[in-house]
Length: 191
Length: 206
Image (cartoon, rainbow over all chains, first blue to last red; front, side, top):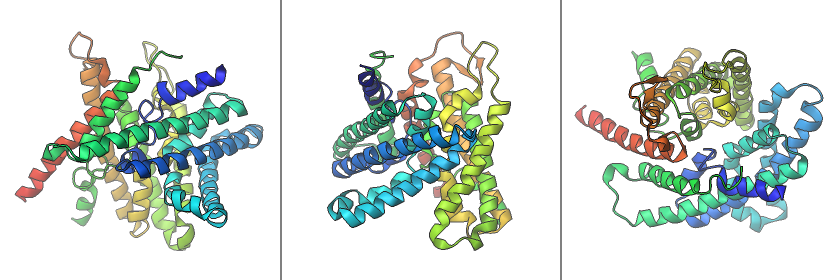
């Protein structure tokens, strides 16, 4: 039951993009086409679960016992950067087809603030390891859901008549605002 | 003369928010009031100036292949400094029990590390220029970012709460939507459109 609450809360109620404002750059950047946003979403879910698990272990068994918690920003970002690099190399060697699909998104993910954000949020919420994995997976899922809905809408906007000054980024932000308003309907489902 | 241009470009011509559209997460997440926007902007400015200075000094000794991770370590160091400083000095709750600035900015302080503006300036400017122009560039871009955040925060606070910097002008509840998430997106969208129109006009007249 607890896991279901974590999932619903992270995917719908506190959606990482539309309610917590993390990962806006990829949300705006790769949402022009539905195909690329699906690829990006899957890559984010994958890296997010992996990096949150590793940073969680790092925090619990290294930083916390040694009273080095003030180093968590530096150590987390380094671990995430190294991890993404490693995943990229492994994928290239072992599974070229998966690399073809996800490869171009991986370098972008290092500077995606959702990854570091979720790693830090997990520490803040005092989850145990199983909850941390579920939390990171559902945040990745929430990101993907928002990205897929948003890119489908943007494909439609391409075809419609938008005023000259609102073209491109401004209309995308207004659309995201309306989408966020729709997601507000989920508020108060769970605490 | 050149340095003045170097400083002022961050405000209009290369404004990180309105023109380059970088660093959107803190811009949306911390602009629920004018004060929060100002706090976040100044914290980012500090990191920008300091990391630009350090990177312009050490860039010539960093091998090309590991430059991005090295820049990130430098930036992360200054972000940790800001985080600890803000925890020490801006962590007192308000008079009516509202959360402190440190609590309100919350996770967005450590996330300055992954703010694209900081890394973009390190890579595009500081690694190729001398210390003084890098520091001025960081200050200009940082203050341009602060200005944008303050503007966005003021508009949202005015519409959502009928106040600016906690001074209430009209004794009435505002439109709560503008303090919440949807208001952030919509306000920023219109603000970028207005800024585009203004800058287009200025550069046409020149």
